[in-house]
Amino acid sequence: MDPIVIIGSGLAGYTVARELRRLEPAAPLAVISRDEASFYSKPMLSNALAAGKSAAQIANASAAQMAEQLRARVLAGAEVDAIDTAGRFAHAGGEAIRYSKLVLALGADPISVPMAGDAAGEVLQVNDLAGYARFRAAIEGKKSVALLGAGLIGCEFANDLATARLSVDVIDPAPRPLGRLLPEVAAERVRAALAAIGVRWHFGTTASAVSRTAAGLRVTLANGNRLDADVVLSAIGLRPRTTLAHLAGLNVARGIVTDRMLQTSAPDVYALGDCAEVEGNVLPFVMPIMQAARALARTLAGSPTPVIYPAMPVVVKTPAMPAVVCPPPAVPGAWRVTADAAGVEACYEDLGGKLLGFALVGAACSRKNALAKRVPPVLD
Image (tube, rainbow, N blue to C red; front, side, top):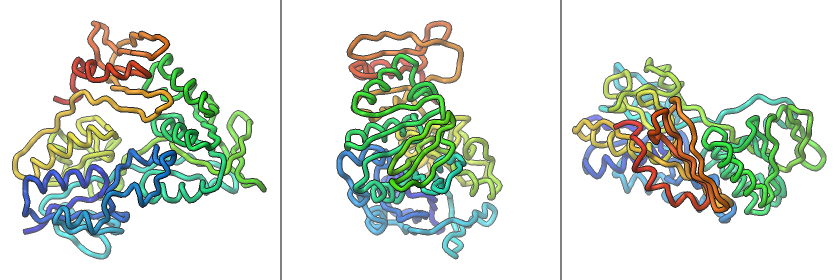
């Protein structure tokens, strides 16, 4: 019997494998990974430095240990070159691996912005354990970091780096941090709190060049200002990995297009996680991945199960000013904001006053569960 093959060993891929193994203890299973295939919590990458954690300490299990736990074949360091959906093969590491069902858990790539300067190639990105290891090595003994991006991951890194007593400059074209997630008054609380622990903000501009100096690196901003730093880290967002699926003839839009069953346009080929676009939704967060993995495991085990996305608040790991956001859909409405010295509660309501999403900072984060019960599901 041909195995169920999962391409990707991140949270999505390994969670599907674990859930499937609970339902089907003996089903043939293979996991193909382009990296070392160790299991770790990716969200830890943006807040592990202040805790003094190395890449090795973040990893919870090696590829060999995961293979034993899952009773599966785990191929580490095997790049999938092509997928043949007609012949039901995944070509990886010079081998044609036949599948009964195929799961694409490919993840997403960090967005790179072209920059001038003789050190543009030295801009670092942290999107996996290897990237974190390179970043840790680069900042060893260093004092300052220029951080590109003030979104969720950028703010988490800024908080972590400042807590680790590094000098941090954050550059972003938006007028405030977390601009796509928080209304202005809530974002201002995060900005002020991070500024209080030493983060310097540079809004309304971008980095146009990175050059070497005798002391380190110099970042030239589009507004003409210059910043000196030991290390430059880019955290400006992620783009779903769709190239492999596109070359295989699968429907691709922002992500790999799937229905509620996580079925792609090819028979017995599924997608989930950061690479997937589920009925128009690209949700690169932990809770949607967990919901999708549990549903898909049941489908793979023979019980077709559509994914359900309830309200899924996202916790922003900025201890200087804790934040939680349940992003509202893009429908007409307005933020209703209540603020005091301890926190901000912002509720996004449609024109009829129905709660569609919320953003909380500070003490208001305690309202997360109560508000989540009132928000309609993304998919039900």
